Image 1: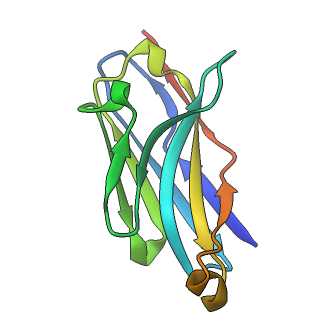
Image 2: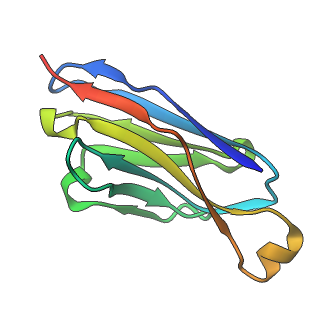
Length: 125
């Protein structure tokens, strides 16, 4: 089994910053893409940012220039630096990872999708 544990959420004032972390552990042979998604009350879950094992990044348009995703492959950890936060960034932020659990699954590109339980980010004065 694989577990993803997020941390770093909390209450921040508009214009402030937060750094989220997500550590993956368990039966991990390798991790392909890691990403952050968010879900605000009454809304669908949406992509925030994603990063490949090689460091290629992808951001939702509304996050470009404010959020930065990074990862430490040795630690199986992904980070999300969030700057210039706005009240509309308030949401539960979820970590996602495409995990290869064995050599065979990596060779055959059979990654499994795992999710963390989420961490709440509240942007309010």
